[in-house]
Length: 236
Image (cartoon, rainbow, N blue to C red; front, side, top):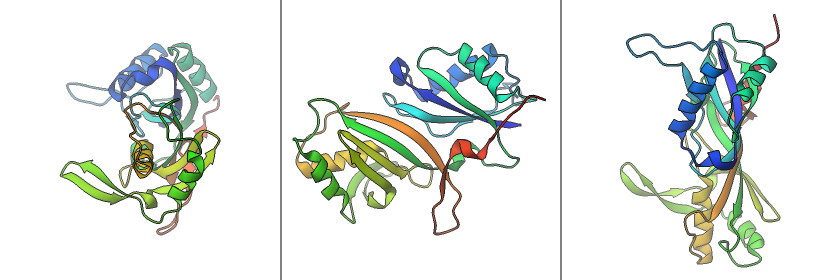
């Protein structure tokens, strides 16, 4: 059975990278004595995959990994066992069985929600909220993005699916995943450039709220959280 696990990452653990998070969960699975399946061959490893690696320094309430298990425990028991072995900074939020032949978390990601704040003293001048609203009314936001084949111009405006400004917080829903991935930092850098403001490294506080899959027909978009595909595992 494939199981989808949702977790949050916060506090000091926001400074550990994706590979360390992967190793962290491998150890946590063993300590929680969960029946994880292993690959075959000379170097067996746990069969697991993560939805979308979170950048170092970012926090999140919506991280996901899929794990193959043999006769997993009930969801509530698994949550208790996992959180009992977790260090402060990672908390498991849900543990759900996936339908047969469902795509893995990494291949399913289509969009993400973010909350972005400027660190005190690093943002644009007072009243930036109204200027940001004007900036987002543009039909095109061209940026130069570095890629494997060198820099190229890209219009990122179609990759922003939704946005609003709530006080000092910018709420964004943007394209994510293999088909097109927009980092909030790139959008905010474009806004800062339009303001004539230099945006130094670490000027932004970025928090990922959720990851979505798209169940819409071709040409339409119907986003649901990745955990919505799974079902709670009850006691036998």
